[in-house]
Image (cartoon, rainbow, N blue to C red; front, top):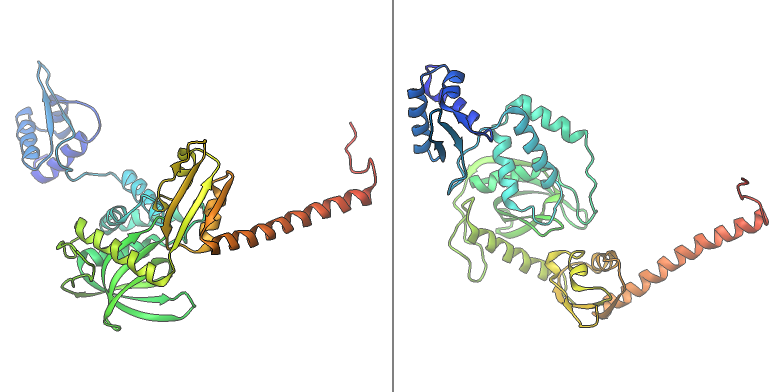
Length: 357
């Protein structure tokens, strides 16, 4: 193989298989001399790939973990598997799946050949994820479009549906995507309204990158970092999270929760979203959660019930009242079914409806 770039790519592909390759076998695979293999190994090292050589009569090479992440070569099957996995995670606002995973998906889909893109779509369309239903599902293509535009500093157009159902067309300068663990939000500068806005991504439709570039504006957050709008800026991500938190607090009254659980703190913490914080043990086998959040009463009530243990809400009063009403409705629903079953048994009479052995 006389084409040096092609040979290096082939060599790198072989070395990324987790095994040690004898120099002679590599030379035979690539149809070159052992001396050429040694030169190519040096070239890979110069490019940042940590290739380790073993000594001995035969000698061998293997790729090891280094100080930095070098570019990876993926075959078709590996690329499809990774894209499907990233799409499945990005399509649901799963806690822990943040902006970095969406950036990775955007980069991968940008370079996928058309034939592999089709395979990814077919696989995704043929599978149904089982989710916990805490947040709305999102088309991963929408997320990747928003992430690519934010990273590339490219203006976006999209259709948006507000909470009351009003539909509008928006043109924005995207800043960051933020995941709350329940939903994805886009922090962006709205050009028509000449102000910063947050958009729920599950309400975004038909995103279109206009091709017009923009210089990033400073986000109006106290103590904002100077990371700008660069794709890998930690400061920019932190600023966007602060801005979203402040915006959500303005839109919704904050709930100050005070809840006692009849279970150990570790049990409760594993069943509550991380943004609610960690409960503190009360010394008697139970625990207490004191925290603030901007979530809805309905959502908080549901999450408390899903902990699956005895609990008592000390505050706020509106949550106590909502739980009282919800409990009454649930009790009536259960009584209605029990009454129906009792009436059916009375109609059948004693002994009827019982299977005989």
